[in-house]
Image (cartoon, rainbow, N blue to C red):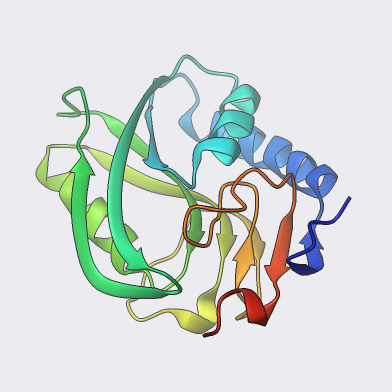
Length: 179
């Protein structure tokens, strides 16, 4: 059932699961016998990361970072680390898992930070990519879906901490976020 605040469903749960299986196979093939550290960016990546790691056929370690750059619908551009990694990544290959690449500012900062912490390789897996809003040049190595410049929620993506638990990606009705 579609939530009353959703104008339309862009990507169904079934499509997300199918694409995540494909991405998991690509990651498994690319990392071969290595054991990457899979780092989820809280909170939006959690549903996607939970599905993705089930599809990776390798030994992996997981960790989380909580970084923030958004207030409401707009990125402030100022990336703050709320929770840092719990382990050292010196000499390790890191796969950052994100819900969406939007302006690219957050992921650019996080990727640079991973290298400063000593990671030997840093790649990005993202459920969604919204290239029309990019402010800095960054691409994900593993991208689920490209989406148009609409306000999307669900499957981890939120508006003011709501809608994360929707099992699909939907477009939020404008009256829900415009004042």
